[in-house]
Image (cartoon, rainbow, N blue to C red; front, side):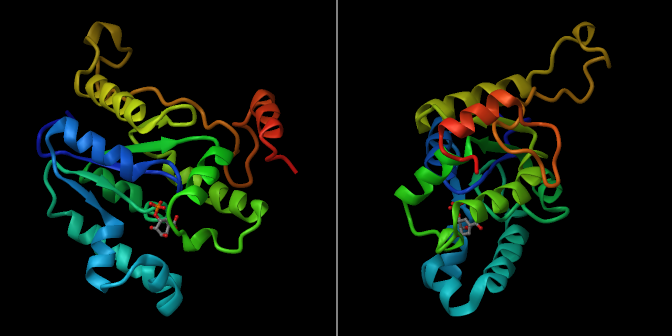
Amino acid sequence: MAGDMDDNVILVGFMGAGKSSVGRILAKRLGRCFVETDDMITAKEGRPIPEIFTAKGEPHFRALEDEAVRLLALKRGDVIATGGGLPCQDGRVEALQALGTVVWLSGDLATLCERALRSGDRPMLHGKTREEIETLYKSREPFYAKADLSVDTTRLNPDQVAAEVLKALRVRARPPHPALSPRGGEGYKAPRPPPRILSPIGGEGRSSSRDAASATRRGLSR
Ligand code: S3P
């Protein structure tokens, strides 16, 4: 349902966004294969990700991600879930966009963290304070925000998120009538809601006072 059957659907987002569970559901609904970059890495290294971090450190893990991205060039029509840090370097989102439609599974940070801490062992969260996690998130958000589509997962379960992604892919595959588009229907991009809580690095601007109030309610504000 992405542009054509050769197009991959590539899920990006912070830890706890639900990329794996949503990806599996999407693949099933689209009749496509499901691939996870973290699985490619653990299969190559023969050990789980926390052990890779402990034994060889984050730089080694990031080099393995580089290699995984090179291998993704062989994929056609798959649903691909990426690790939370994989898109977060210059040129990386663009490299993923060359392989298909990039979808950001966003959400408010408190919800993402709560999910991430509940499921799986994530070395990037080990021993981190809330402030450090927020700083990490802020440094990553501008990369996620380059995605072609985004779905806010905050109040949705994986089935609902998958349904929203399918809807957004359908809209994107069927551009509006040229008469309805100011630029003759060229380059249609599905609308993306503004990020919910955090502003970009150094960032004035995108979080609203309502978001700040909701962050406060969720105990995120310092
Ligand atoms: C990481 C996220 C993890 C995994 C690794 C590093 C990150 O994947 O790739 O632990 O840097 O955010 P998930 O996003 O699936 O948790």
